Length: 469
Ligand code: NAD
Image 1 (cartoon, rainbow, N blue to C red):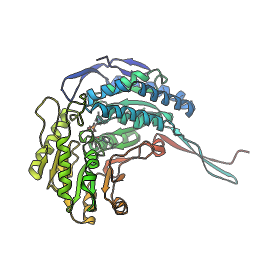
Image 2 (tube, protein in one colour):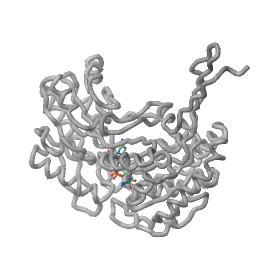
Image 3 (cartoon, rainbow, N blue to C red):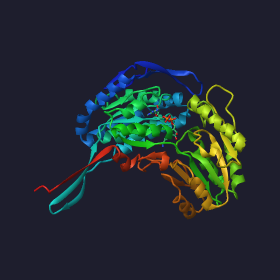
Image 4 (cartoon, rainbow, N blue to C red):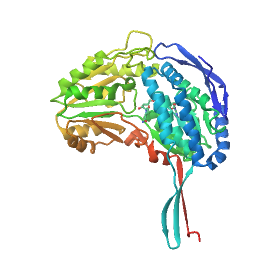
């Protein structure tokens, strides 16, 4: 495996320390990775601060060209990036390839957006204009479930808006990001884009750094709370995309055979390590047994293996900590419900857990009340529509939800009553760069993607004066 380096001030440099990155399918070392010191973070921030005035002064058209060139580089190197992603993250190679191509698509769409000046009023002696100015140095903090895609949710918008950027991947998945940094190093003016890595010790330094103006964070709600508290010291702008406990609600009129594959995909994609996965499935009593049997059949026929092997549908959990955490949800499932598929960690090296379906389980159990972030789905029976809406909303989370029905009007009526940032009908996890995305309640603050997401990387400036003669 080739050497990996940090990108600081236009140069690939070794870290002051190193750390191993493991393959979660084998627990073997994929590569030694640089680990930045606090002083390397400070050097990166100083470089980004120095690069800011010139970058902010370029036209959006010139910045767009840079982002589009990055998309070309991603596509030209998609095979290598996907293989690295599978090696460090664990996901099947086909999914990793999808993630890399999705990354390029987000660069292309978000990179095509504009920030036009808007005239708010032009009457008599008053002309009021609204401009979107860049903020300065932005910090992007990334989790380990979709390292490249979540990077692509942030980077193009931050740069197009005229900001400079410090990216920090998660400690267990830094390699594909560092390789990407190396590939685009000469596409971006020096200092505009910097990549550092850490062992969970520099995120907090970024959130309190006086020269970082905004943090765009994706990760758990617990860490998001720390980010918000720390950012308060310097009144940084924050966008927080946090955890979820998405409810899927299956109405009494579905054909269980028809909806089961979509529900399974919505719950088990990326081995359940998706912020917006279905994490609780509420099923009407009239279709409960039948849908349960369909999901069990799919779970039992799903190939779980090393993501680099052809035919693998689900890979391992990404890291040991998450693997140990999901095992505590399995214990709870055995105690509080009836496990009808899977139910155990697999007896092999790597962090593998069988796709697990749990029936006859209720609120009050850990598996229903908390975010499992793994391949374990509880099925909860209900009989009354208003009651299930109340139960779906009885959580501090509010990221996504879905309603499944053969009557779109009925499904829509339920959807409008759910307290979450996104509600899907007869699908789950359908995301695109032109559709704004964000969480309600403790699932986040702010929006990503589309014009709304781009606006969060800017400062609104109003100029109010008489019209020019
Ligand atoms: P995490 O919160 O442990 O880590 C996320 C990132 O924060 C990592 O880069 C980590 O190094 C960094 N970090 C750690 N301590 C920090 C601190 N004190 N200050 C600033 N940064 C710090 O999350 P994770 O375990 O990597 O990811 C899983 C969680 O992320 C789940 O809860 C999942 O639902 C959520 N998630 C949300 C979205 C979304 O868009 N809403 C997307 C993916 C994942």
